[in-house]
Image 1 (cartoon, rainbow, N blue to C red):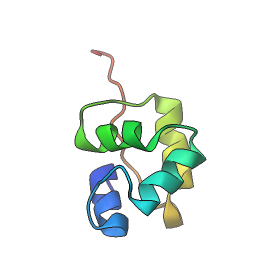
Image 2 (cartoon, rainbow, N blue to C red; image 1 turned 45 degrees about the horizontal axis):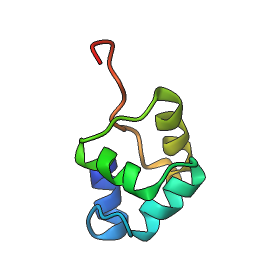
Image 3 (cartoon, rainbow, N blue to C red; image 1 turned 180 degrees about the horizontal axis):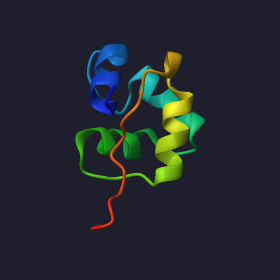
Length: 72
């Protein structure tokens, strides 16, 4: 599941004060606002952070996070 869809499922919509977004941010030591901007596509996370987010997601539902590409 993609990050925006994951947050919509668990928080109703992506928002910086969503319970699941805050839990996920704490699990990967990032701010909830940074992950919120990631969900909206304005920021990208490192591959390591993306992997940590996928591992920290509930039931392993999160599979896709905005990862940097070789062109970034």
